[in-house]
Every structure is written in structure tokens, then in C-alpha cells.
Image (cartoon, one colour):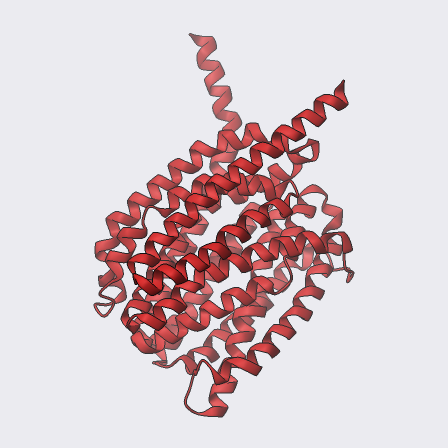
Length: 432
């Protein structure tokens, strides 16, 4: 009996650091999510359904562009620095060059097209200026801010990564409170100025914070370009799918439906943070373990899967239970919000099932296979969303999201298991 108790206490001590790290990680992401939802609620009330609907449409466009900015170099930084800290100066310079080049091109392309299509203000000069500020903020500055978290994760400085996430969320909330509640900002053009100023302050603060980790060495790490493009393409495809629904509903539904669905989608995206909190802790471990072959990561992945599913289930139940109270937070104008959240509440379970396999593929440098899964399911899913949203709005949109996530689960695990079998066979052949 004493021996069994001793073994259990020893096992508990082994897992205690990971458990405490997860509590801190999930706590920071939940706090950031709460701050983000508060920011969203403040903007929804201050701007009103019409202006807020335009903000949702503009955000949908920049969500695609922000993933193109940098060409996926952020993932390469996290993976390479996790494996070898000496790579940090080169990977930081690699990111800086690619963000500067691609960010300039994306902002220029946006200024050449968006002011004639998506009106931020009826005044041409104001429209152009506000569009420029929104593009620079949502594409370039956001990409630079998000890089800080990955830098800290690559150095296994999880507490600093958590503070970076929470700090950015609180900075956005403070900006919204100041702009909307103190200075009565009521238009998207006015919010563009405040958002730019708030994000610029965060970039300067995070740059000062990171200075002790080392200076960048401005080089292009050529062998990471291909993997970065694979990684980038996944998020572009996902962003296209995630925003196809907003564009289609904007064509066939009322502005209230677009606004309510946009808020529901943001709540759903925030709910994934409980799963992301776990994945961001184990990704560096998967990266190190995979140096011995992808088959070496499977014991850890199989231990992680039931935990991820439990987190997804708890998140889904929480979303379903709070859905009825959301109009009290976002306002009674968003009449469809509760229904949308109740229907979409169970998607986190599907996300949890696929996320473990996808993280193993990414951490083990199998970005080609991961890209094939993500791009096929999301680009095909975008077509499905367009089709079903056109004929059965908005119920067709909601049903299509479930079909896409189910296909992602099947593809991710089938490909991962095939790669694991090949890797294990190679290891046995080498050992023999």
C-alpha cells in the first residue's frame, strides 16, 4: 500500500510542473479572451450594428492578409529556437525582413483596392487615411506583436509569453475604453486612429522588453522559406474559409445577422484558447522529441488527446450555458446572437480532436502534409460554405462548419498514423 502511494505521489510530482504551467497558460489566455470579448462588446455598443458590421467585414479581409505577412516565418522561429537557442538571432532577422517586405506589399495592395470597395467614411480623404491606418495596424503591427509570444515560447519562457498575451489584450481593452467611453468614438474612421495608436505603443513596449534576448542578424534562412510558405498557406486557406461565411451572409442576410454571426464567431474563436493553452506548452516538447522521428512523439500525443477532448467538452458546455445571457453584454440589437452560439457551441470538441494530430505534424516539420490537410479542407470548405450559405442562409453556413471540422479530424489522424508507421519502420531498419 505504501509503495503504491509512493508511486502515485512520484507520478503527481512528475506531472505537477506541466499542470501548473497549463493553469498559468490557460489562465492567461482566458484572461486575454475575456478582455477581447469586453473590447468587442464596447465596440459593438459604441459603433452600432451598421459601423460594427463594416468593422467585421474589414477585419475579415485583414485576417487573411496578416497570415500572409511574414510568409509563415513565425512558426519557423518557434520550432528552430525550441530546438536550438543559437538560431534566435538569425530567425529574428529572418522574420523582420519578411514582415517588412510582405507587409509593405500588402498595405500597398490594400490601399490600391479597398477604398473603392469597402467605405470606411464618405469623405474620400478620410476614407483613404482610415483605410491606411486599419491596414497597417491589423496586418503589420499585429504580426509584430504576435511574434513576441512565440519568441518567449521558443525560449521556454512561458510566464513571459503569458504576460505578452494578457498585456496585448488589456492594451486593446484600455484603448477601446478610452476611445469609446471617454472620448465617445462612434465611427469606424475614428476607431482606426485609436487602434493604430494603441497597437503602436504595444509594439514599442514589446520591442524594449525583448531587447535582452539578443539582436537580430538580418539574413534570410533559405531552407525555411519552403516550410514557412507551407505554414502560411494553411492559415491563408483557413482565413479564407473563416471569412467566406461573413462575406456570403453579407450578400444574402441582414446587417443584424452579419453582426450577430460575427460576434458569435469571435466568441467561438476565443473558446479555442483552453485547447491552445495546452498545445502551446507541448509544441516545443514535440519539436524536440521529433528529432528522433515522428513516431517518437506518439506516446505524448496519445496522452494529450483525452485531456484535449475533456477541455473541448468543458468549453462546449460552458458556451451552451452562457449563450442565453450574451444579449445582456452585447446589446439587444443582436437578436440572433444567442441562437448562433448555441448551435456552434459543440465545435470546440472537434477542434480538440484534430489539434493534437496537427500539432505533431507541425512540430515534426511535416508542414507539407499539414498544409495539404488544412488547405484541402478549408478551401473545399469555403466552397461548401458559399454553396450552402447561398441556398440556406444562415443554417447552411452553420452546418457547413461542422462538416469541415469532421473532415479535418479524419484527414489529420489518417495521415499522421501513416507517417508514424513509416518512421517506426525506418527506425527499426536502422537499428537492425
